[in-house]
Image (cartoon, rainbow over all chains, first blue to last red):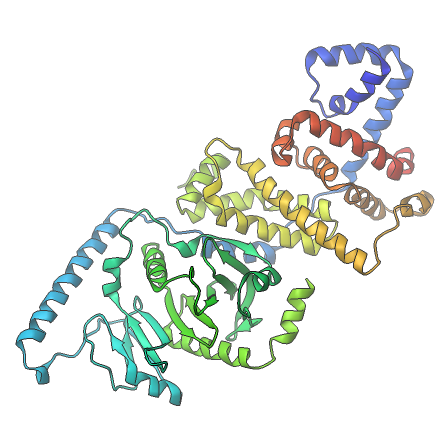
Length: 330
Length: 186
């Protein structure tokens, strides 16, 4: 073996990845060549010197932060089949109930029409602003009754979808999508909701990709802090993720006229999907002049409503400016 | 469930794809330190390394379906971390150019080793020397030296042949030697 070839093999020899035959030949050469032998020692000294750089430990707070963010992304395994059977039975029950209600509506006097009933554990959302009170005039309970509620309080099940939306004619209003929506969702039980697939991008990338001003307040409520932005695969939609260390809150944003945005059905599928794993997410949707927002989190509707108002208030002011400068600066 | 800690990375990853959060927990516990150290050595900046650690595991979850059955989990995860480090490093490079704070490459030559006898400073010098290597050379050195990877594993992470990894390390050595020779002698 010549010195030129020997030099090329030295590092592979040091990291112990030289094949037996070549190793033997190299060792023969090293035994007879003092130049290559001292080159080997110099290289070994250099390679060993790199060992002074010791490993560091992961700070506890960081491990906790990643774990909590990850928890929102890992779908909890459905423990056994019986949950699926339970869902099927409850669906059949819901269909039977609906049929009974329709029959009752057909045969009973309209003045004696039964009130919509909710199970224990249902939640109510309060309309505490004047504009919300006005909005209740347009409420439509699509599941059971089409009669608008005049009540200041709307009873809601956690699996209902709640939209504070623009109705026909351009007025603001409320749209409810209840459990009936299940019938149309998840026809393929193995399909994952479109919402669950995405890619983390930077805030400035989100601004470039979306045809509207992406709103991302630094904090929400008293505990939620901005974490990261996700571009939903194949959809003109971004998800801003917030976390309070244990729970996450997602603010989905897309243009009001997005041709390929996330639909209500996607959210319906998403909450049903999450419900299979035991988490109860609620969705609150609303629109502004250019943006459609959907706030999704494992919190009550009233809290979602407060957070939505906070977001609207922050968007309307320039409070976000400093935070955006920080994001762009990163 | 009790034996989950004894399962292979790949088995755990497949459980994670199916939605098992415990499997993710075990994988995270196994690799958090390795990924943080990889990123720290690559970027020579703790804050950026912590960001890379976070993003690596979030990307791992977001793209878990793209993990192929026969692939090695470790090389797949390191590939994600490597890509993030490359992105971050490019960003840091641009920023340092913008602020004209890029370190002078001859800085190492000017340093007098007699004044740098403290072990801490030696650590810093080694880290600086590694982080000043070009991205691919840097990755090859870190993977083989610190992450205990074989040449073929490093090749998978870098997306090249084993021979190319050898070449990368071979090319990195003169640079490292130039910067670190005084310390080898001492």
